Length: 201
View 1 (cartoon, rainbow, N blue to C red):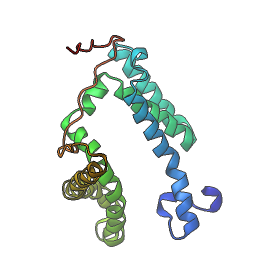
View 2 (cartoon, rainbow, N blue to C red):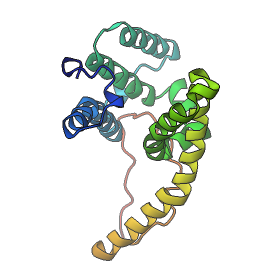
View 3 (cartoon, rainbow, N blue to C red):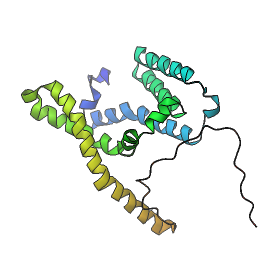
View 4 (cartoon, rainbow, N blue to C red):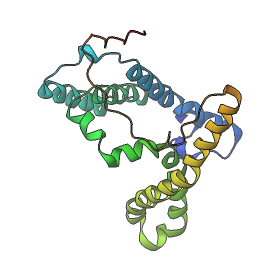
């Protein structure tokens, strides 16, 4: 992107070529996020993650320092994806992310992703000269969270429910209406043993 003269790719989008460039620029980040979620879902790496919180903290601190030190966006994305993966394997970081504020951010993350840039750009355009860019940067996240909460409740949850209802019409499966509202269950460290299945009579 810098070779094409776009030093801030997230501000571009005035043509089809620049829009495609922005999409390709951020595509690896989305792919890494999907890969991390898939690995966590398959419980890959649980048995190799150390039990000591001190060792876990040291690994995360070293990884964070490495991510800040590297002078490559691609390498930095891989490092911070690894940090997120390691945090979710267990320990104090995983326990912190399971608190209600972070669980809400996880559920409303898509709405927040959609709304935060329009709010930031609108406030910058209309209010920067009146209140200053520092105030805009401080106020925009708060307004984004409020708007994301409203979008999640008024659009995302009903949309998910409607989508599952339509899908159930074709698959003939029961629909759980509270699917989007339930908090994810805690993930226990894998011990390598499986729970015995009940024997059918």
